[in-house]
Image (tube, rainbow over all chains, first blue to last red; front, side):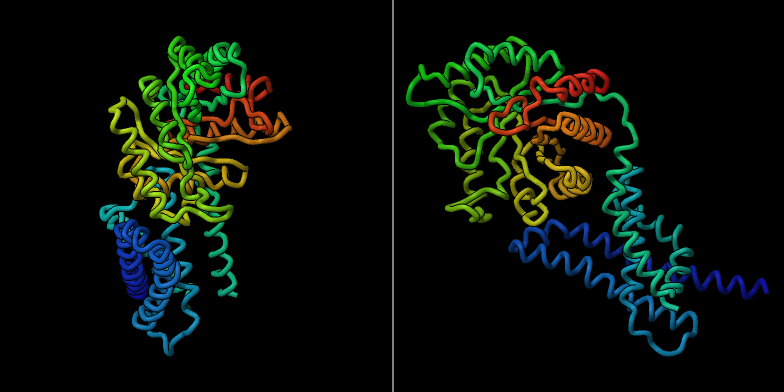
Length: 133
Length: 289
């Protein structure tokens, strides 16, 4: 019984680790290139930014969530309504970053992202599975 | 069922992201902030010459550190009434030690700007290069300036001010619509000391922390609220709105807030002689002294 529990915990931790790593890298890249997006042939760059941040990112995270769930949880078949799971995980991650910025005045950075990835891996793994099971 | 929960959670998270910054900053006092720059826009050209000195005195006694004005002068007649009003205004601000912020509107003529800076430029502490340029009207009603028009106009005014080597801080003010033309504050802020944000209406006040955070992030500059006011004949609503906003901006640790307006003929923005005057004065005494 403890072995099964440990395996389950590790599986969810790995699941969350993968999802959070992608979310954190995407967030850092969007922050890094935000000004470049905004100043690229306005308003085309602004539209691209919105598309990347709120269209492509949740789709990617959702697709990854499906793939990770399938690989780690030995789920059969592929779900096609994965986008809402990606959107949910992205919004949750953005909300945590907003809380950090507003309450603790800590803007997103690679160091913050590293701490978030480790600290939130298990709950995100759980939520990743929940939003896709 | 699970899909419904996830969908519902997404909606809750979106609403949370929109409203949380306002709710947090409104309810968490940042304590007294002696550095908070309280200012007010005074339309002195609407007052008779003899009343300008008294009004500046009254503004200063309420605790305002800065008076914002729009450029007013007549370059063709040195003795014109408006020039004497401007002289009187600067006499008073010098006397009472109040800083002056000059707002240069988007269609200001180079002749008037040159004349004003030559005569009164030395008394200024802040100069606003263009006014909400992302909204500015170009050749006709409804036609906005293109980005290129804004940048070239900005350069023209900026160069004229810079040539005089005045000891002033430069800023440009934007309104919340800047989020659709973000390239403008990004480009202009490179030559500015800080950026201004103008807030009117309850709904925009509610969203203002989001706008402020975005403006800070994309410009890398401090944000000051350079116009903040409400045009209403309801004295209580006006006072509540102003106090609500002052608490919010102070708690956010902003550089300051300039109220629009002290007086305003033809609208209900002015706080002079209304309950909001005393309420704002009391707020200044309690929070910035």
